[in-house]
Each structure stands twice: as C-alpha cells, then as structure tokens.
Length: 72
Image (tube, rainbow, N blue to C red; front, side):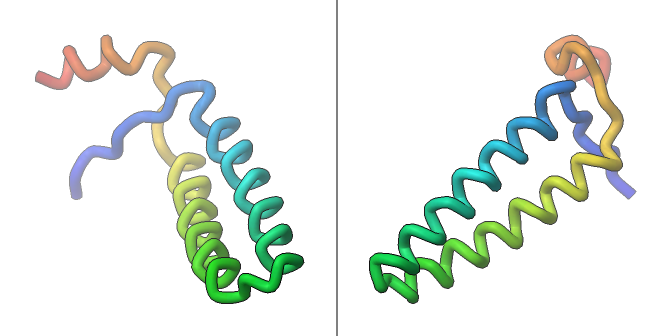
C-alpha cells in the first residue's frame, strides 16, 4: 500500500471551510432554480467529505516541505 501524503495542521480546517462554502453555494443555486448545477455541487461536496475522512487518518506533520525532502 502506498504511503499516505501527510496532512498539515490546517488541512482539516481548510477542508471544513471549503465544505461550508460549497454547502452555501448549493443552497443559493437551489434558490435560483439551477437544480443541475446544485446536483453537480452535491457530488463535489460528497467528494470533499471523503477528502475530510481521508485527512483524519493521514499522519500530521508540521512542515510538509521537510517531510517531502526526507522522503527522497
């Protein structure tokens, strides 16, 4: 199994912020009657939720650049 790319301390918060914005945008699209676009955004939200679950099991490193240089 390949090594998991580590998360930074901010990774989970950044994903949560993106999810919040996408959910807000989906609601606005629904209000505007753009059901197809809202449906596509729903799929993107599902994908981002998967990324968040993946992030929870990734190792956390303080400095991603240092970790990448050690991996070489």
